[in-house]
Image (tube, rainbow, N blue to C red):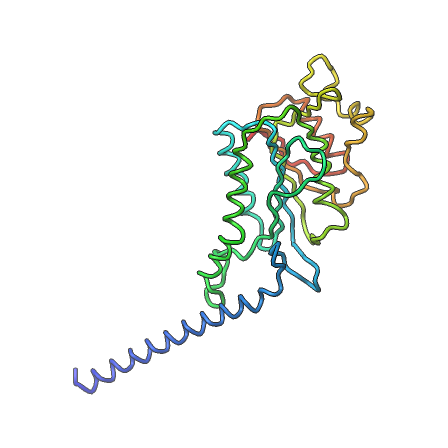
Length: 276
């Protein structure tokens, strides 16, 4: 090869290298710029999209974790995996809420509340800064979520009572209110992880084997105690609500039927009633 051709060959590769570097730099600048320009369109606390100052989410997943009894480690590990998988399936922008269900019957606050940010595996390699998207996803969402799930499934502070109906009603009022702070434009899903043994000493207990009606929802709902604990059938946000019942112990068919009837009363859709 002549020296002239060698020089021409080197020049071509030099130009290609320079153009590639310029394109990569410009793409990075565009990605960073796009990220920060759009950051103002999201609520800084919840990470939910803002439209005319209204927080918006395309769907909602609420998880209620019963912590009144300690989970066996093998069960806890399975529950963690199931929860992480269920949340990973949620689309970008979905609202995720986690609650600890203990013996309180009022003043509930969420253990976790955040909309799913842009996922690294769904980022656009041409317009997004993948490293920046990954850092934000870990910092604002996944890191805090993993810590919360670990804490809720590892709690070891047994309670003397398990007022499940009281807690479920309080949480559904808070998360599925018709006038909520965050507008949900699509589907709603509720996951409850529990042994589903309603236990309020002196009032009603599913542990009371002397009571032949301990799993009879109709009699419970018409009792002076139970009538105050049924869900609000006028709440439109509960109609068509997808409910997953994740049992942490093997339960009788009567117990399963009680909770299915409890949610069917408001036309919610009980998809699963299985042991995890």
